[in-house]
Image (cartoon, rainbow, N blue to C red):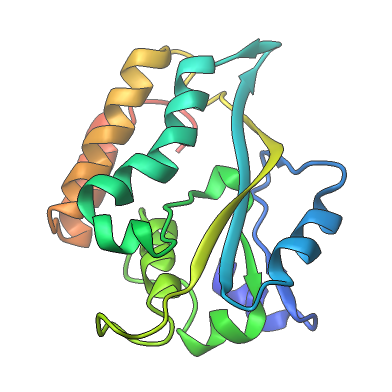
Length: 191
């Protein structure tokens, strides 16, 4: 779906905003400003999860800090060279040319495709240790996403589910295993 939209777009910049996400009102200005830096290959906004006037602060905070701690722990050298992990609720954006050069989102990954894109965008110019690395930036503006899918679980359970899925992805679980895990853990009516 996102690859199809990117293919049809005619602009130089792609901005992936999910249907249940409200980007910041001044987002276009910040997308342009962020991508002015040639080393920046991908960006996103601070995540805030809200449902029925309730902000899920713990989950929002976890989504914010995992942008940093996941690559810092799992790939410290890449972290030092500008890698961050963004997710769909952060309204990710990039140059269309960079996105197309990598073949877009990996369509064999039904989940965690956004984290996979971050790694591939970071390594845009090669995997060798001495190759230049793309920087991934989080803009200091809020993208608000509906927490309707996770409201029944609460902050702790939702954070646990996302953490387990991400950990299994990082450990190399296959697409089929991730889908099975997702289906077993996402017990809601919104799938």
